[in-house]
Length: 152
Figure 1 (cartoon, rainbow, N blue to C red):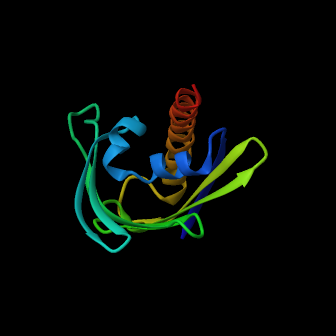
Figure 2: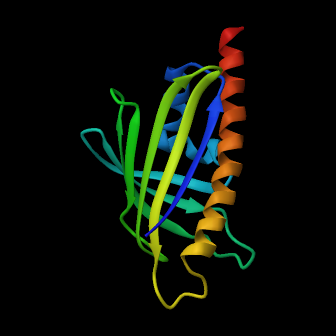
């Protein structure tokens, strides 16, 4: 099993950070990599959804089904891929904590890449870290912009 662990501090109120980052239907506006997010169903607090990436250089638009369960009391989220694609498994954990300067949002991804692919766990971890940091910075900007607009 391989693990990535990334975090960022967002200068915005907890409720805004929580609501914007847990509104899966709006993820194509929040994340640069998602072309669409289709809600497939809900079971209590758990949401099942299909994410589709923007097409790659060859025109292929990759997609997969995941499910995600936010816990607003602990400010944590547990998620997993149902359609695992290149992974044997992919589990995600998000947590939010109030800190000086805002909300620390942390994403942990645990996974194992299927054998026989032209890349392994280390290469996937590098790719995920690069993408995660880029997306976290984008989200930080958008949430802070929304917070500033709401304060006006």
